Image 1: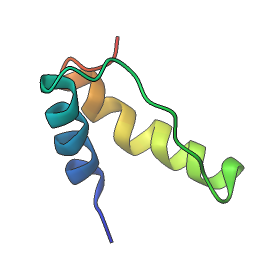
Image 2 (image 1 turned 45 degrees about the horizontal axis):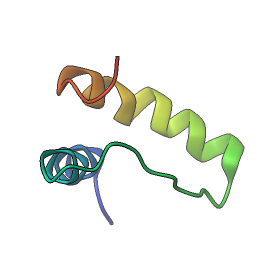
Image 3 (image 1 turned 30 degrees about the vertical axis):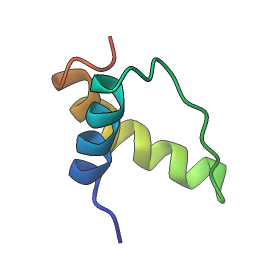
Length: 51
């Protein structure tokens, strides 16, 4: 299983390579979006990848 720190690291690598956006899908939208918002978004903001 990939941890939220790993997601942030991989997105930072893609950003450094020139990727400016992405689309991703979720299986259980209600549960997974809440998890993403609470656990991944703060790390993305801290890394300067989101505002």
